[in-house]
Amino acid sequence: MFKNFPIILINDFINPSAQEKKDLIKQITAPKIKSNNNDGGAVNTAVDYESNSLLDRIYDKYVDTCHEVLKPFTLHHDTSSIAWTYCTNDQDTKHVWHNHTKSSTINSVYYLQIPHCEGNQLEIEYKGNRVDFHPRENDFLIFPNYINHAPMKPRSKEFRISINFELLCNEKAEDIFAF
Image (tube, rainbow, N blue to C red; front, side):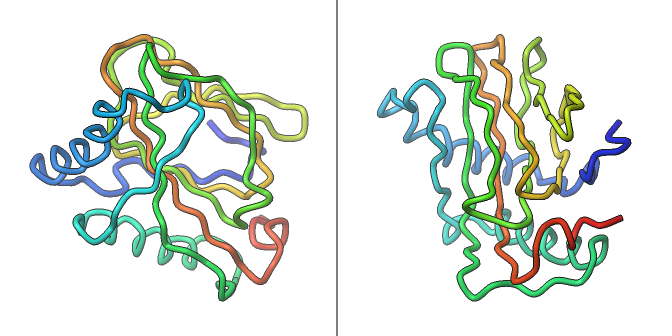
């Protein structure tokens, strides 16, 4: 799928228990539903690790996997283990092309919940080439900070929930992702 793209896709990265998944979805959606505001899907919100060991497991596996599959790198002292969630549905979404060059070196996204509907894909662009990625639950993408991407609007009232992690490294993304 990602031929000629510096992107790593891992299917079934972590399969949480039904209860772990339910608890994390509730933790992410409860404040959103209560405030009824996510600025039209334009805002990512931090997720609290302290009350969710699943996030710790995902983050630890993310770092270990990056060390296994990428060129050698060292984490910058300013690296944060904060997880960010992007939670959208047909009522609360915004199609925004972006990258992570100002906040990370290695970027990732874990797909926690994907409604069974049209419009859940992630548009990805690299060197003038575009691909539409249709994630499945528990898929995990690892990619360099310079990859331009935009989540498409889900066509469902059910939330599409992804969790983003970023690593800031001492090395450049171009060197780490040199395959």
